[in-house]
Amino acid sequence: MKSVVSNQREFFNTNITKSFSFRKKQLLALKSMLQSNEKEIYDALMKDLNKSKQEAFTTELGILYAEINHTLKHLKSWMENKQVSTPLTHTGTKSFIAYEPYGVTLIISPWNYPLQLALAPTIGAIAAGNTVIIKPSELTPATSSLLAMLIRNTFDPNYITVIEGDKYVVDKLINEQVDYIFFTGSSHVGKIIMKKASDYLTPLTLELGGKSPTIVDKDANIKLAAKRIAWGKFTNAGQTCVAPDYVYVHKKVKSAFMKALRKAIVSLYSKHPLQNHDYARIINLKHLNRLENLLENSGKIILGGNVDLNQLKIEPTILDEVNWEDPIMKEEIFGPVLPILTFTDLDEVIQIIKEKEKPLALYYFGSSKKKKKNLLESVSFGGGCMNDTLYHLANPHLPFGGVGQSGMGAYHGKYSFLTFSHQKSILKQSKKIDFPVRYPNSKIGFKLVKRLFK
Ligand code: NAD
Image (cartoon, rainbow, N blue to C red; front, side, top):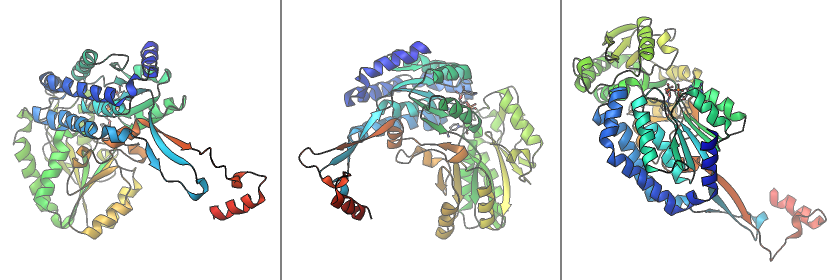
């Protein structure tokens, strides 16, 4: 670990990584690496998570291509120094912000989107002119080892490298005092990373998880809401950080919604989802057992609930008669189980959500502008959608990140560039004039300064 970090630091200190042409070349190399190895990537994602080609493209490769293209289009202008205004007190000066790369960056990624969540931050790190060490998840060995091999064949390891392994590798890398840490994973591990980083005051971004609420109001388009919720929840078998964790449906439309939800699930995954080759599996037996345990001890199963231990699959499952005392409401579900709660007064739901940790995402289905405005103003959460689920995260113009326990900092598009850049503030003073007002021996100056600052 020592030599990996010190070699990257040496490489960074040559300033090679900082020119626009270098950054552009590396982004193009990354894109071509992905394009030339799509088949291998599909195979690895199938092996690790039984991801279908369609899901692998829309939620992993497609997002990466869009991020690279967007970055290539705008990078030159993002890199330019940003001139800022000059207040009266600073007459004669000029000020600007320079975007400076941090240096050696460490990207720690989880298993649920093992390619996308390792490389989307890498795009930002390259764009900002850093070197990169990627520590992918040990729970997706096929994708992580493929990623290591592809990166090794594409980039100088002193510039970008992958180090496989578990938490001990992370510990050692942080102890080598990298210049920036970008962590995606659970809130629990996020706290460990932040504590460790504080030993060196290493700046960091935390992309974490939590329970993301979904609300279906009485004036929602029920059919569309059911379809979009089913898609957002059961994509990747519910193992998505921004998946709807639970649904609050208005009492008046509950039965219509439940009917539409069953229909949507059958239409998306067939009547026998366990035999559907395109339906993702649970990452490992430990997580499957955790989900089974939640299912056994919470609410009433009204659709699905069957488990295939050999394939590590759980059917898309709807749970009714759930309350906040049930174990399933005490943790992030991160699996294909959707608890349904009922409400009559939106303000009560808002109050309940506000009493919990700030969610990573929130989704509202309804038509009233007033209610949407009230909801947005009342509840703090990372980001979300009105009348959809997940879609916000694929818009590169939007910052993606959490707040409070669901994370700190954000990325995607320009926000990735900013995340991986230190904003250096520079003031250029004139040598021609030297206003006396600031000096202690000028009585008129002091009076003037007081007036100017009032
Ligand atoms: P995790 O926190 O267990 O692991 C994430 C990474 O941290 C892995 O690379 C792992 O090796 C490493 N790690 C684990 N324990 C560690 C420790 N004690 N010290 C140092 N490093 C350690 O998360 P996971 O199970 O891989 O992923 C699921 C979680 O990630 C969910 O909570 C989900 O919501 C969250 N997530 C968040 C986002 C986001 O963008 N906000 C995206 C995907 C997943």
